[in-house]
Image (tube, rainbow, N blue to C red; front, side):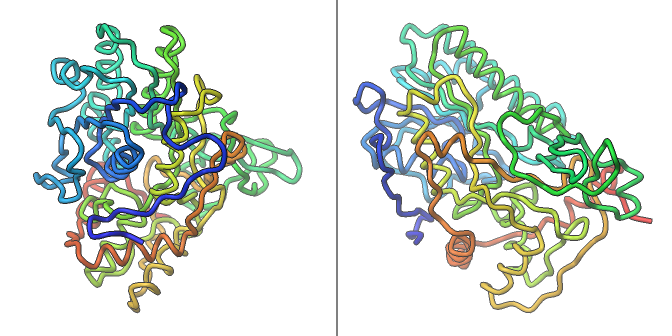
Length: 398
């Protein structure tokens, strides 16, 4: 369960010792974005394992509201600045053995109208980091980059007639008819969602997805060219303590929690039966730590999820139950540009590397709710939806 700073208890894996470098020596590690939701949990675990950790973070206003979070680990060195400033990156990299690159702007909808900010911080920021790494006298021993399931676009599907398919997107005409489920592009029949493997072609459907694809590919190509062991982890939908409840572009679980805490009904687009793969932040951190010490993962990309699809409507119902609230679900029968229908992970590849998720979804939701009782949550969901509507990025069925 969470502690007073929103932490979690970790559990060891079988096999490879946790967090140990290939040589068996603990390292000095830089975590970009290390003051954020995921990064701060990773920092705590790295410190617990005996590594020396330095964080570079811009304290993004939308996430932190201009304040340093209370949960920052006191045994960690913090530098404040963004990854596009090469001098700050140079300072952050001094004496570093390994880098976790988590820094990024997050949010599908917002990325569609704040293109410069997303491309600058995600794509350009990664290029600045990699170029600065080349100038260091000391060659790093590992680079782990946070990629995203969003780069797939739609997940894998199966058609009873045509077999496995990898459709790009649903047409605007189909969505306007409230015909939500994916149809086979060959025969037109409804297709069933299937686990999405790393071999699926990438069809980015948002600016955010494009920039995450940039981050992954830049790091893997750079690592291969300069013989730096590099791993890309494609995060699925992460939830847990320390997730910003006042950022309307964060994950859907936190957005629903914010609405419910403010006694407002969860807003659901489409019909609520679209599915995602939700992974607890503690499980995600174990995957990140695994990538640091597992040499067999070098030079490759891995899904980091649970392999279990959950409907968006069910998330809202579970949270209402845990919060003991009776609120109606506000099903919009609207859809947003860039949204997909189904995507959940095929975790075969990362399981072979030693990853086993251990937090059941409802257990993780209870931890999130327990922690949220002491957190102020500003509900900005309707305002963010209005921003999308103003830019013609929200559509209504006919």
